[in-house]
Image 1 (cartoon, protein in one colour):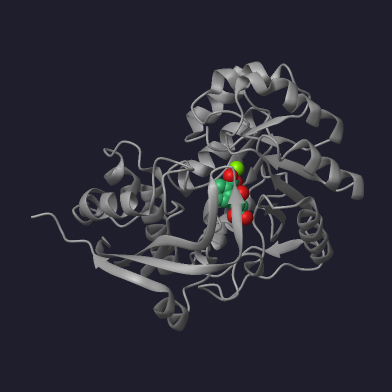
Image 2 (cartoon, protein in one colour; image 1 turned 180 degrees about the vertical axis):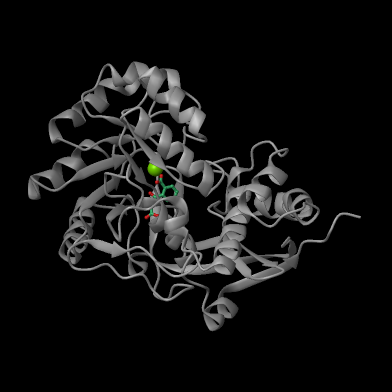
Length: 371
Ligand code: OSB
Ligand code: MG
């Protein structure tokens, strides 16, 4: 049986084409941990969606690095098989650290599928060759800057626009965009910036016909999301609150959301992402694929996932050019009709370009086997 015989961690940094501001702060560079595994037969790559600080989730690059090097990696090296299910089992004893687990699992899946010449999309159960692209727009200094950005993205063909909002930079900003584009598919994302007492303010958004409001309240408060859902007409979508298929079920059954944003990293990996999709589909809840400003590696995984049948809304998967001048992989292009092709090659279907990888790498470390 094939085994994982080497695990290598790598911290990379790539400048973003424009700073990305949310209610959590501003990012000018994309910095993330990549995982490379070698099995007896093959090589695979994974990307960790954690950020530089623990603002979006409790995980961040240095915590992912430590848990991969000291716990998840050694457990996997000591385990029997090199399959994705073996890897999930070997990592199951570690509580939390879902983003770190997801990165290692992605690398193992990539290696396994390359050895078998199967694409990630077919492995996960994709039913589409192309997916619809949306774009997530950070908070701007002025409404004029926001309108300029929306105009540019709509001209490129994006099929849904999501505006980051926070208290005070919300109703006027949405009114400005809605006033100019009455028909565009529009949503907002608060990244947990509101409190339950803000319900009246959030109700003001009802008149704009938004597709959804994403994560208005605290990440750990399903109950108050369920109370808010009864007070506003705009459907609530949860992002930060959904860390597993079980949590998705609980959120829906509690009435805390009517739409779910699935991010493979946040739920602990691509297999749990599929299980989350399956639960939502069973419950009749639409899902879409979120994004974490991934490089081409994570983007490839998101496209494969977004091709599953329950992903009925355009996601946050945008073209490489929306994030980077130069991606780590061959760039992902969006067609003028606002769709992107799902990679069909073995595994993720893409690899880091060696020159780009060398230019972006800040640090490399190999995981040592447990004594
Ligand atoms: O809340 O969806 C979010 C990026 C980093 C952290 C959280 C979020 C986001 C985005 C970007 O909205 C989506 C993308 O990758 O384009
Ligand atoms: Mg979000």
